[in-house]
Length: 85
Image (cartoon, rainbow, N blue to C red; front, side, top):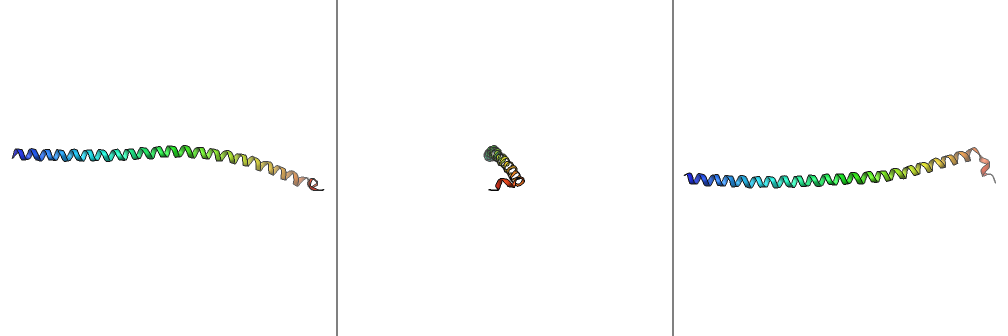
């Protein structure tokens, strides 16, 4: 009878070890996927910041051009004789 109990304990230990390895593998996959997601988000943030900075520069240039046009229109409106031929 002691022998049967020993086999049962060995089987139980084997099952526990198998379950432990499966859990470790699962945790490893989850950790890897979380790391990949984190890397993607860091790269996405850097790319987004770069694109937003570029867009901001373009908007600043357009804003300056608009201000110049507004001054020119204001000057032309104030001096209609410029358009008389």
